[in-house]
Length: 285
Ligand SMILES: Nc1nc2c(ncn2[C@@H]2O[C@H](COP(=O)(O)OP(=O)(O)OP(=O)(O)O)[C@@H](O)[C@H]2O)c(=O)[nH]1
Ligand SMILES: [Mg+2]
Image: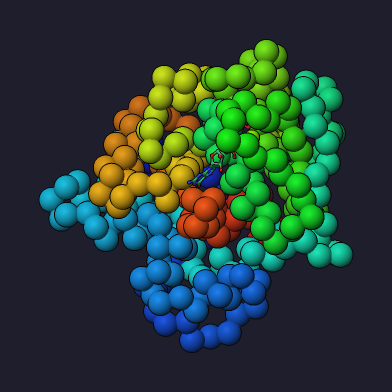
């Protein structure tokens, strides 16, 4: 089965989490996540496991299991541990490295890399800013105007991995976008995973389809992130998620079959995504 092949390709995945219970043991984590852990269980589920929360609202007859593909389902303890990888300290320096408009200007690095692509204005820079909330000195520029990020911006996360904020495709995309991004995706040796951001309000557009086709053509392992989930009602979001999940299940080969819904405003899904990035880059040892 395609899903089984893909999950195999994904490499080491964390163990299934036990059913959520009261947070009785004390784990070492960031103060911000410790605060999340003190939330009432319903709210905690919404912030940490948005897909699970949505799944609870699925009527039994409306496609059972469709968004239940929880291949990556870490425990709160694992998520808490991953927080420290994204926390800037003297020993774990998180910093902006450089920008590039061409692959041969990109920093030459051995450590694993992950990149974020998507339409202009979909929320790439905002998500990276949210991932770096425990590294407040790192400046990630966001803007209401689409087409803000013009270069590939490289950020170093300690000795663990680098993260790349890409310019958006579509409206006001840089002229050299195709050369820049296609070449990077095709030839970057240390690229471990591509995160393709789709606006959960809008769904998959024609432009997103072109990006999806590009990922498929280059046989990249990629993961779909659904942004701005704070903007919709639960019913609308559920409809969108089901539609996109169906698309992933039926129209893609290289896309990880689990969606990652997030909000850079409420932080929902961001902790889980941090844990996923830490896991696929081999940072959770
Ligand atoms: N409500 C809401 N707004 C968001 C979210 N993420 C981003 N935005 C808004 O969307 C707009 C675009 O955000 P950016 O992060 O700059 O988007 P981008 O994908 O980096 O855009 P380009 O650099 O132009 O490609 C800004 O006005 C953000 O405040 C979110 O999760 N929720
Ligand atoms: Mg940007």
